Length: 117
Image (tube, rainbow, N blue to C red; front, side, top):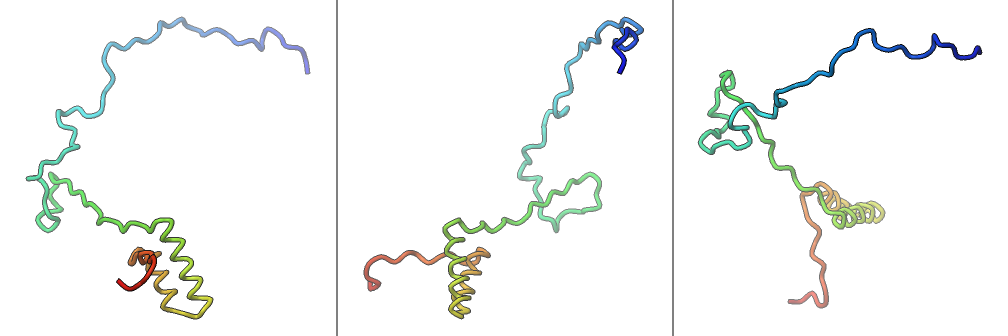
């Protein structure tokens, strides 16, 4: 490689230009007084009451509540039930574990002491 020459040095800009200055505030979020975060109760309608072809209506559908997934403790119990049911050939025990994993059933309360109440 040859040594660096003056031709390799960066060159200054061809024109001197003043920095750009902006005197207006930047656009902030919503330009209307109401940002739409709150919907008045009288504007909430059932889907059957709304004409979906009306361009002046915005339809927002809220999905149904999702079943809460089982806790870690319930998952451990359920997987143990599935394994136990499979190993011992007890389909009812296995099914109970699978139901807990799907969130259809909860684990039974821990029994302490005598079972007669």
